[in-house]
Structure formats: C-alpha cells, structure tokens
Image (tube, rainbow, N blue to C red; front, top):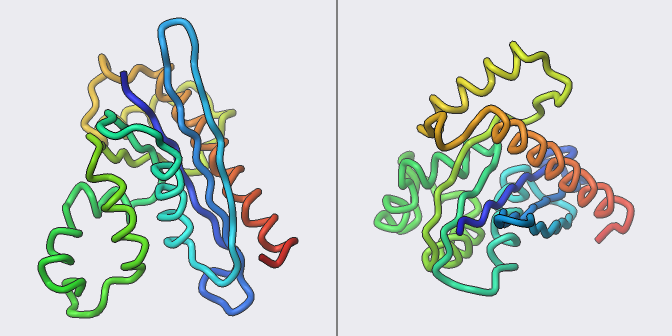
Length: 190
C-alpha cells in the first residue's frame, strides 16, 4: 500500500518585506474499494516560495501517524526534488551545512526538520509540472505525459495517461490550497 502526498507552496511578493505565503498538501491513499484523502493548508507572512514549498512537505509528513510507510511525494518544486534525487543534503551535512559555494544552506531549519521526518519512511520524490491546464487537448496531455515519464523514470505500466491526469488534477488542487493559505495569511495578518 502506497501513500501519495501532493504538495505545493505559494508566495506573493517573494522575499519582500510585506509578503505572505501559503502551503498546501493532499495525502491520498488509494485502496481497492475506496480512496481516502486528507487536505491540509496554511500560510504565514514574511516568507519565501521555497520556505512554503518545504513547509507543505513538512506539514504533510507531520500529519502521518505511522512510521515505515511507502510514500511518493509529488511536487512541482525542483528545489525539493533535486535535493533528494541528487542527495544535496548529504554534502550539506558533511560540510557543516554549507553549500557548494561555501555559503550557509538557505532554509537549514526546514531542511533539518524535513530530513528527520523523512528518514523513518521509504520515500520517492517526484517532480510534476506545475500549472498545467486541465482543459489541455489530448495532444498536449500526451506531450506532458511523455515528458513526465522521461523525467520521473516511471514506465507506462506504472503510471498510465489516466493516472497522469489524476496526478495533474491533484497538483492543481494542492496549488489552490497553497493560494488559499496565502490569502488567509494576508487577511489574518498571522
């Protein structure tokens, strides 16, 4: 049984003094007879898009009640996917949390938190294309699908075109949750 987590982050006025951001996540478990989903979201002022992307993943993992789960995380954040795919965090830890440019790793606090949450699960991070129109033509869907298969190293047997459309629909929904969190953060001035 595989848990699928879809996450996104959003930020208006990225890195300005009066910005606000949001994050969203959908935890989805497909069972033979039923699908179970949980939506979570939130937001905060004075943040960045990368912090919100990381927070979405952290909050999704924080919502889990059991260790040792088989998890696929779908995100449009190359920042997160590449960190895990290329194991940037190994070098960061080895180098005292300095990056390849010998500068402190940005968002170290969130990376450390995420790494501690991920370590007790079997996790695969998967990059999805953000902001894909659900009204795409079949030809456009096919093009996006082929690129997804190539980039993710899934086979057509593992992820069908119909599965890809569902992944895309969930990515659009989680983007809306992140925007909702950002709007609430702005309105409430958290």
